[in-house]
Image 1 (cartoon, helix red, strand yellow):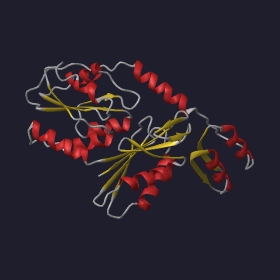
Image 2: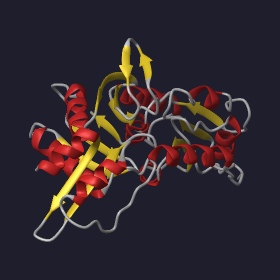
Image 3: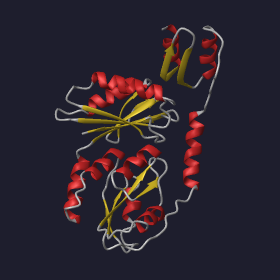
Image 4: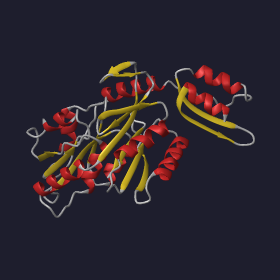
Length: 298
């Protein structure tokens, strides 16, 4: 379609759905006026919605920093040997951790690092003799470790650097094992997970010899920049393929808050078509900020 080709030339994350009466379009672009002008060539415009995603992102960061996270301290329950605290952003991601048995989730992540006091509050609100803490970001590990000597609980900080690592660590907890055995098993499981993250460049920059333009998609493989792109579907497929190993069996795609239902369906269909039949695909609405997609490969 000519309209789709034009929108892809001025932006990314393009979705075009048409029927006999209407064409629905979605595009991320620095020049929304050009998109509107092109749309007028096809008829009248209705239900237009223009949002500045960079301003939204900045406001979210500001709000997250201003909001103090309050947890109510509780005494240790001798009948609860193990408890868990995780750091995460996005209602869907938080719910995943709660479903896996995490007692308290501290809001935070990339660009929204919680303080040591935030994490300590969540630990003291967990009525367990031993509390495992999953920072899920390399920049939060140190803040988590500073809580170890500030509470009457035994604190074990698992150095998880990504959300997929934290989720896998929780999946590998065994209540029949002791503290040390679980710590070893959960760390080993987390280290086996491949993590992909797709975000956007907020400004022009130079990184590791790469010239990056504002608005470009940044594909991170296990925390390191792998490549840049302008198309979300293409970037997701390429990054997932790079993460896959011969023995990979599961791929989980966690969709961010800026990914529409249409985009999510498109990504799921594209991945489902390209992944080997032996690999099981799960798609979750994580609602996380900053990252359009978080990809877990095991």
